[in-house]
Length: 221
Image (spheres, rainbow, N blue to C red):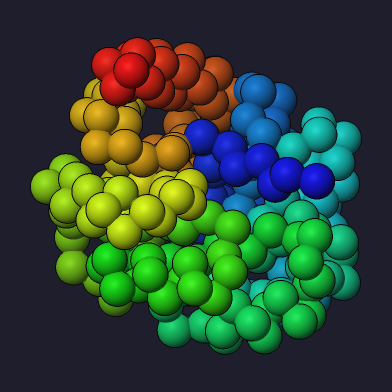
């Protein structure tokens, strides 16, 4: 079965009052179909509790649930996969835990990162950061539009064909320019989570992603 990688991905955010599961519920209710659960500095019991709520919500809505950095947790709750950072366990170790049918994504900041992850068998790549974001500490060098264009051009020259997701401080009026670089999709976190109406923000973001991708697709033909 083909692994479908969404063009709009949501990463739960801890800097708001709403829990990860509440964010997930509102995102899915707004039409979103891909959630990455990212929880740091909580007890294993708290993380497991939220993860179980999130997987139930995603199953109800037919959405994909990806667990950040924790293949064992992903396996224990039967999530759809895991996303690994640059300093997390290897793709091979995660694949051994989860099996071939689960989705494994990896973080990249350079073309060398992309090549390594592809050689290790990832299903998609989160490439960033696009610009500064307070969602993540110890940021890698910021890429900007020029960085994305260079890396994706290099991928084309090397015949690397893998879904690349832009991430890092992105807002909706930047979607079109990003899709023109050749990315597959975008990941949003605080931009969605900080809104009072997450569902409405999600619906609007999906509309803008659809417009941006379709324009870039037509222009490439």
